[in-house]
Image 1: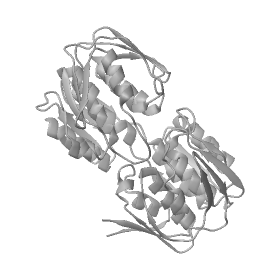
Image 2: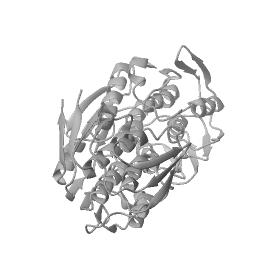
Image 3: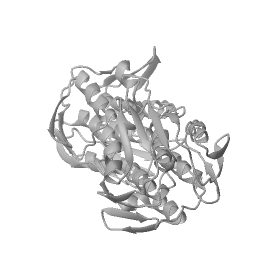
Length: 418
């Protein structure tokens, strides 16, 4: 098992290239189930979640080939198994995305109830209710979802709450349904739009992307496609935070600034000087200590829950007090006790953290608990006095491609050790 060792202190400076989005790659890989031919996916990040998805699809009968460092050719046009087994699904909640496309194309599916980070309950009832409204028969027993439908029929679907994976699952299922499906209160995240763009390139007829109402006109089949994954806005935000927390200057390249407006807005509030081009963002703290900012997470285009932990780390050493409120997941503050062990002045009260910025954090032995919490501990280690050792960094590998190498490029003193 690997650990990260960080010696805090250096101001980060330089440029780093951002990888393709994890949260786009996974649904687009599952969308290959719908295609009648090969799907060429470019700008795919090297992440453990991507590897898990490929293993799951391979067990179902997909064939894939790594064409280059970030390009995958996958053929899922004739699956031999319609089951997504527990041993892989348990590690990654996105595995539920095998359900919609498999059911739509083959008329049945068996998918284990998903796992993933322990940051809160992620019920699948939205997925199952919507599939039933499309005409599927659903049964949940012994930890598995059994779904069957001779034909899916388009209908109007109202989500009680916005859910990215539920929106994506029903989108994929509805592409092959008979007639028109309308999804109300759909998730508006850029990764959902990325999936829609890919499905449309495969021959789907989806309109309304970027809004909360999506219309899908069912088609008879989808074809293979060549498609490039959008940049990872959460990875980009994390490296910009690394520059801010160390009072440095960092440029992230291969990004879409328009997808990061809420994060950029909060960085400007910290006192960061921000400039951008069509595909890059530069943050310059000019050596100044960041100012504390209040954070309240929400569905896109509001502040992303996946950036909350990183901003909590920044607020811990910022000038002033702040209030951090989490509205998406009920258990997404597992990084708080670890930051407190480093000397942060944090008070957790339900879904809210009250923070008083301190001038210094102290290096400590830390335990990573989930993907974004791990990133917050890395950021804290970059600015802490002395050595910080972070255990269980496999959480980081689910969503950050070679994070220690990219931070080294920026001047961080960080090593991965066994």
